[in-house]
Image (cartoon, rainbow, N blue to C red; front, top):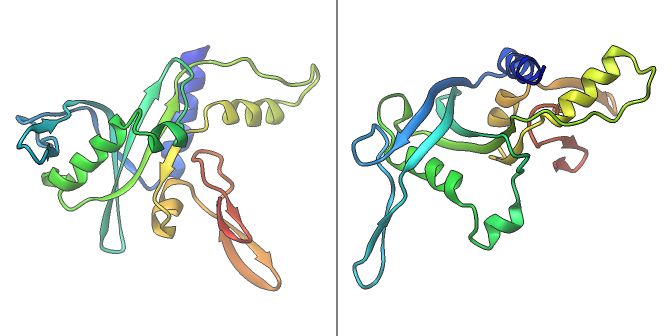
Length: 191
């Protein structure tokens, strides 16, 4: 069942997203279309991080090309801002930096749109015994919601998750509910 739920969630997310998968298992190395970013110390020591990106998605909108990096996590790991702040688990951000700095072809001049972890494990659902199929589906969707960082840019966010139009104080406003990505519209902006 796990694979069918994961595929269902991916299908739903792809159907509503303007981002399209461009590469799966994209190598970041000196022989790739995306060479790694090279860092150099004051003493001339050079460091580069090589690896493989699970998935790279791209969206072109209003003259900009956005790239996002997706990492599938089967162990239940989620993005941690604290770990990133302290310099831990920077791998995905370094991959996105390499793509945006050194990408060629359809990745050339890409704007960093986000780094997202997709939970690829089946978690137990906590629902009432007589729950409707809609409430079970909503709970399951919560379990497969991606975590990570997203560029605070309306085109980028609305490209990842289709907005809903709401009327507030007599004015139409577009909002995202955060069903697929870790972003939700609030009265004060993005959360």
